[in-house]
Length: 373
Picture: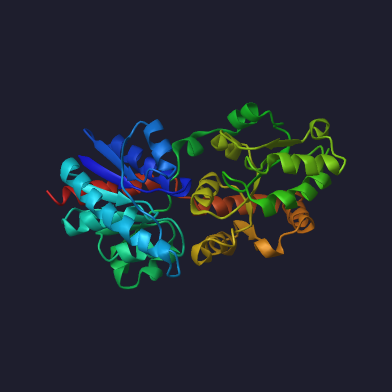
């Protein structure tokens, strides 16, 4: 079986693609997989390190206003279509799968026009513009949320709800491993605060007050990933407020968590943005959360993602423009001081989790490819 998978720009598009690829390879052999992305995207670095073949096409996202960049985007898109045609003719895939990002457009359009089975995976409650267009051409749409189905309108009959693919490492990591790997105390409740790989300034600044409030608490510990660019500034702010981080005994601050699966396994509460993949990992582990959606996400999709968890009792949502350090302290105290409520939220979160999402998508993809024989 030969599969092309395309997704790029951010880790939120790339890692689900890699997870789906591994799930397909675990089910069917022989299996040859080719990733298609752009040269400038993170995928050009991440995918080869994961051991998969990689091919690049030209592409650029459309702006929401007319400009000379729009002309350049049209040119790159046309070039990408030509390159996609060449890739498909050489590789001869049985199916093409897209996981998001503008790079998916050329390769999926080409596959659809050539009569090759194609599928997209939509991670958010509010589908992106590219996926809404592509839904008209592909055979199947895998939705991360049941609430997304209605946004596909006349293409809803193509949609199946799979959940969002997450790494096996997230599911398999144990609390004991996480506690040991990160130097945490197994007798304390753990708060994990992270704003994504690049950090989130508003969350980081609010966390300064959180550190001040919880410093030295014997029952709570905080693991805070600031993002590389924010680390020095946040550490300086905390120290300028009179806190000696090393002497508190319950605060760990890192620029980046390379072992996020272990960090999640050790956590009792998370302070997160509301990207689809991050929420899929939280719910797979059953972790209660305080969510601060990124306010500039397309179509405000992060807030819609977060509201689904809140409406099901798995999270508290604070809008970014309403976030303050004192507000975050209050919400954390409410959760950490009420073990019963925390456990109820954990159960609600776990009920939303779809740890089998990648396998579900893989089986549909294999069936779709087989139906074209």
